[in-house]
Length: 104
Image 1 (tube, helix red, strand yellow):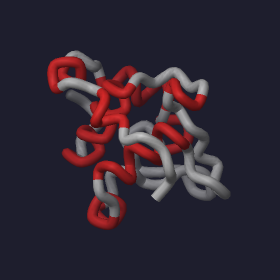
Image 2 (cartoon, helix red, strand yellow):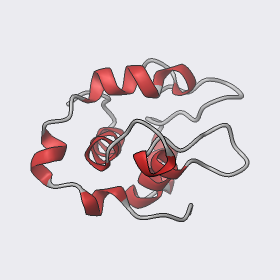
Image 3 (tube, one colour):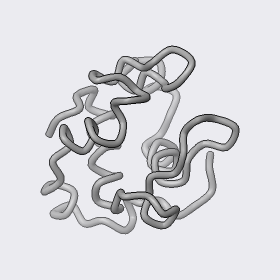
Image 4 (tube, helix red, strand yellow):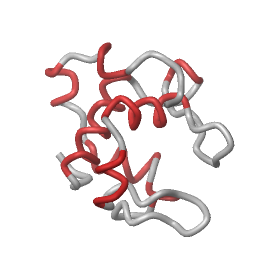
């Protein structure tokens, strides 16, 4: 697990509910993880694969989004790392990945 503060602990359910996931994913994730979360060979993991979702708890996914993954192309997208994503946006993305659907 990547170190850092879990974004979900900083966002309220109301804040998370108001995040539009599809445009956020398209803007910040799709280039590396594919338009439908199917992954891009040698670049980004298939986020919606059953195997990916089964092997990771939500906090691990949140930390990867917020802080990045050392040794991989995945940079930190959380505001604490200079990225554009708020804790609520990260939590909404995690929830969408967990659901297996990159929309609200």
